[in-house]
Each structure stands twice: as C-alpha cells, then as structure tokens.
Length: 323
Image (cartoon, rainbow, N blue to C red; front, side, top):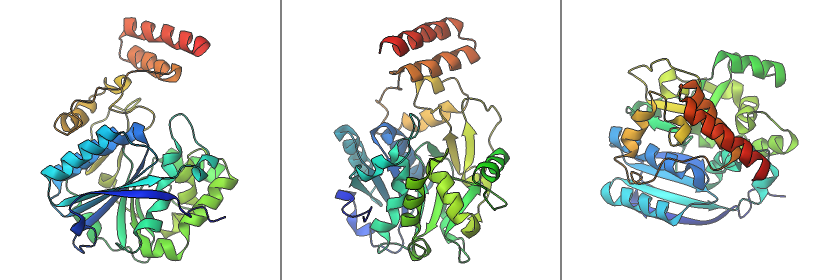
C-alpha cells in the first residue's frame, strides 16, 4: 500500500501565490488539527512581527474551522509578502498510528512535507504550533547542512537517558522535534517519510514521531543552538528565558491558550501577540473533558487558588463518572 497516495484532498492558496516559487521566499510548515489552529495563527502572526522576508506558510490539517480560514485570509490581506497554503489531509491512513489525548494524529503530518513541497524548495522549517517567535530567524536558513538531513535542538538530558534505555538509541543527543530545519532533497533521497511511517506502524512509541525521527536521523542531524527551540513546560518550570531566544516552545501538556495555563508568568507574552492578531477575539479554552478539569484543578491548587481547585476537582470526579 502506498501510504501517501491521494493523501492530500485539496489545497487552498491564500495571499500572494507568486511567492510560492520565488527563490527568495522562506518556507515554513505546520501539521495541525482544528484544536491547534489558534496556536498556528498566533505563531504566524509573531513570525511576521520579527521577520520581513517573503514567506510561504504551509498548513497540513485534517480539520479547520471556516472562521480560522477567514482569519488567515485577514493575515494575508494585511501582509503582502506572504502566502498561506492549506493542505486538506485525508486522515484515514493516519488513524492507524498511535495517539493520546494530548497528541493527535496531526503530529505525524510533518511526514507529508516532502511529498508536497519537494519541487518547490530545497529546505523548509517545520514548527510545532505551541511555539512563539520573539526574534528574527533569518540567519537560520543560511546555515550549512553539511550533508545532514535535519537541524534541530537537543532536548533535556533526561530525554536522552530515556531514549538510550527504551529505544536503545546510539547517539550523543536526543533532539526535540518541535523545530526542524529540513533538507528536503536529502530527506527524499533517504526515503525518510516512508521509513518513518513504517516504523510508526510497527511500534507504539512514547513520544510518537519524535522517537521515530531520532531513531532514523540521530546521526544525520546537526544540532542548533538552544535559542532556536527554548523548550519550556508551563506546568513545572519557572526559570527566565534568555534575551536571545528566537522560538519559545510551550512544550508539554499545558498551553497558553488554555485556562489552566493562565497562571504562568510566560503566558502573558503569548497573549500579547494573540491580542494583536486576528485571533484576538477567540476566548481562552475552558475545560470540557474530565482530563482537562483535572489539569485545571491541579494547576489551580499549585497556584494556591484553593476554591477554584476544589470546584474543578469536583467537576473532574463528576465528569469522569457520568460524562
């Protein structure tokens, strides 16, 4: 079976389509579902505040609300040096792959990038949608791959320990897959997308596509400075970030667009960009499931909001039993 055959149902091009084949354009890709569109929109808006290059944004998604398409159109109508291409993905084949309530099958959509863009550009930046751009990344595209396939940032040391123990990874580092500069020619030549899908179908990895990419590419990856992917967990980190940070990655289970992520001192930074973007009127997500209610109760308790913690803990119990 050709896993990728007819996987893109249609494309919708917004903005200046002449930029797609313009050799000066920088190409950036995302893989999302409807729940992460707000993150993607605010991320693109933040990129535009710090970078004035010609940009083409490629969004691979299985679902997107019409209101969000309208918001993307608003971005392209006010910024004339960008194009946004929405690729509507047939999700059926991806439903065979392992997921969780935190990570949907959209996490695998990064494997679609080369199948759609290999004839358009030779390098592309993939970004997770829980990221904020707070400085220019122009110099990133000027770095030399040196025959490697990827450039990425090393994850926390405990992630390497995990990978050595459970994946038997033979590498000096384990990279985070939230920010990936990809050499599309080398990726295609080495058949990485098909190998990644094959490995994903045969295994149930804890960190899904990130584990897969580390197993396939650990020795074909050039490490980037931490500033290109400053990994930050809103649930349990309180250290300041460096002034030279380019991509702030709100990694982990708590996001800045969720009500249980509003207690952290780095959430207002994300909100500043949101409130000036076409997504300014989109409300912060409130708990809708028992697992989200549990997160809300836990984060409220950690921040000494005891009445709110009790309220949401009761809802958590009630929803878990009756919903």
